[in-house]
Image (cartoon, rainbow, N blue to C red; front, side):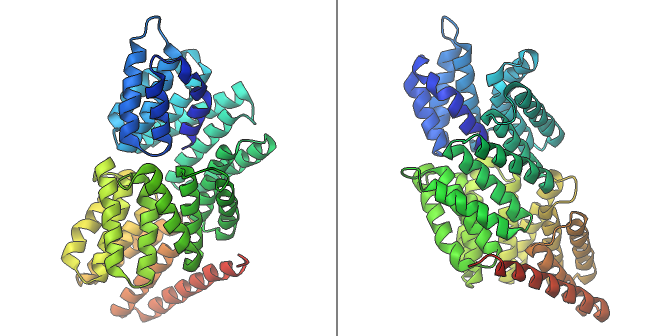
Amino acid sequence: MSVLRFFLLVFAPAATALANPDDFQNGTNALNNGRYAEAALLLGRAYEQLQRADPPRQMDADAAAIALVAAYQFQGRIADAERVLQPLVKRWQESKTPYLIAAVESLASVYSLKGKWPEAVQLAKESLVFARQEYGPDHRSTRSAMANLAALHAQQNNLAEAADLLAEALVSARRANAGDAELLDILTGYGKIRIMQCDFEAAVVLLREAVALSAKFPGQDVASAEASYSLAAAYYHAAHPERSEPLVKAAIAKYEATAGPDSPALAGALMLQADLALLNHRLAAAEKLLKRTFDLLRNAFGTEDVEAAVVEARLGELALMSRNVEKAEPLIRHSLAVMQKTYHKPHPRLATAYSDLGALLANQGSYDEAERQYKSAIANFESIGYKGAPYIRTLESYGNILKRTNNKNEARQVLTRAKALSQSLLQQNVQLGY
């Protein structure tokens, strides 16, 4: 959302100068509230009118183009987004026109969706260097560039780099007395990174502040929903589902009120609600939630999207829990194939996909091959220093396979390690001060 919020801050005041200000203003409002199909229709119409304007209104046309691209991205129309952005970015590279920095950040995001990570990171770095030189360290444009580069790093599991950028952005925002909307985005993004780093205490502190800040905004808002969902996720991973459940329900209600019931913005919160259902052994409810999530993502981004593949894997895991191996196999194998295409170096999602395949093979009685997949998963987790719950579950599964294959000493060592790591995670919760 950072590119969008930057765009609204820079360009919204110009709406009254447009050939059809209603299309532009209504389109940006729809975009900010997650109504992406409506936003694409209105902004596309405004963009076409401005391209034909006489006399030319280049800045206004660029404003509509950047907003339109955001709507396209959320609809999964990546080729359309790239087509609109490339001439804008080319002009920026030639002229370094300041307001076009938003187009550079948007194209970096589009490249990341296409798996073109080196190109995406290069553009995001160019944007940040330019913003620091043009605006200084405490300008919202610089912080926006930091947040966008941090998001790219997080997607590739470069969590230390992402955390450093967001910590710097947060310090800058406080120093500059940034607006509540911008501060909310930074706090939420930083809190998510802390969850990924398994630093739940820090995540809860950041996300509590974000939720408190979101209460200042009137009505429902996607950013408010994102803060509530992220805090719910922090509580869930910190083994406090009783605090997570009311927050995730509130987040889903906010998403549905603003973005509508068919928006892909709901995906993360619905998956978390499914996890909470599983904790209470409500398998049917969990499956229904996961199917809804998969349909939302598949309809928006297609079956080869990595987020859709994450949900597909969860449906495969659920099928294994129900002993439906035939149903689980195509889900788990396809999810792994998408992960392998998306991540070209170790990543927790890729490691989890190998672990899922190990579980599938174990259920099929192929214990030697299952052992190899678990080893691949463990090697992936350990190469990036990841010690979260998926790693612990993989160790437990691997230990149980070793017991089956009569490697009892090694099995004992692996299971003892898993138990120690699990206790270590639980000990973090004592420090949360609940």
